[in-house]
Length: 412
Image (cartoon, rainbow, N blue to C red; front, side, top):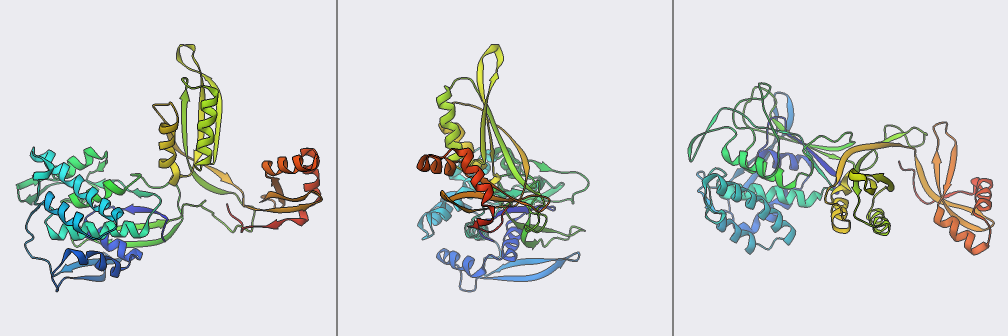
């Protein structure tokens, strides 16, 4: 479950309590959350009450926090910063918690025309909001996802009572957060009325989400469902799916069926770099994990000659490789789109030849036949050490297919 991608699906909106309930249902240990909260010096009667319930027939978990003041008073951003800084948490967790409250403070400051340091958190409460944010940040830290997807979030509609009086939904802080973090909100008659996406819920999602979309295809390994407490006249829940980053295999790898692999295509047209610079950037992208990088000449506007650099990368590596384009290349823009490829089952191994062992990749074809693809670097190594031509070494490999020794299981 750890180090997988997460898909957060929030059909009826999102709040801190629903998100935390979903994480606990997914398998985040409650004991870990409680231990992380100890430095906050909570009341001895503080505890989580986690229950399995149903919302219009859909099972999931709910969480109730006992032992907090019933009328949570507002706290300032500086007070929260002081609590975070004095805590014994790991720096990575501190940074996560601080990022969420910084997003909330900046948005509140913009709405009220003040400075972030002067912000009083009225709408999100005090200690209860800190408990929610720390608990959810701890969950993200525990799972350490490689990529986080989230469905578009419903804006809600109508009005809601706040410390500033009656406000329209979505409330101003939610609107400001959506603007700052380029989060698209969805609405319409298909969605329930009322406040569906809370400021705390949106801040958490805005900070941690990599893609506000559903993956093109995904293999679900675990599901956690958190239920909301409001009766919306329909199932009210958030679900978190732990999904595999590997190729999505539709059938047994012992067959030669093709399998679909999601990819991200990154591409730039460059006319202000030398061929050596282009080759260096391509090597850097390959070394950093790009599946393949190709270059070809293009003629750009005003008749300028340039290069098209095209890279295929795994979705969970797209952000890292994106930074390499801008740090190591001269381009000031990068095209990016979702794509994919069909692949056959393969495994690495060695073939024993009269020239010694040669590293190869064994492939299972759709008709069930096994073929091999020798590693070119190994062909060069053997050729240099024996004086034999690469074509002769290839012929020897074909004659020794039965000597293949696998070094790994079948993958796709």
